[in-house]
Image 1: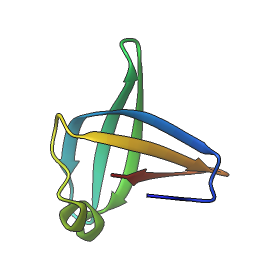
Image 2: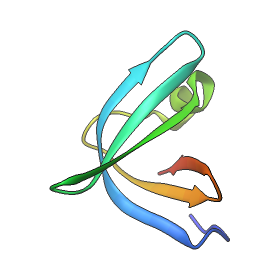
Image 3: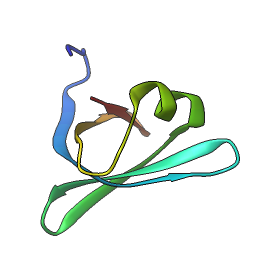
Length: 68
């Protein structure tokens, strides 16, 4: 995956919590740091997100996206 965003932080998905319209994805980027992204349920399903998967927290301005 190649993106123009410069703030790409590698980690491991620790939790995927679907809600009514959005899914909260928690990515552990170090033993003491996690980043949580709120993405659409549709995006989470399309990406096939599961705990234990490697993923990137992609931070652009005030938004956090998830890339796998």
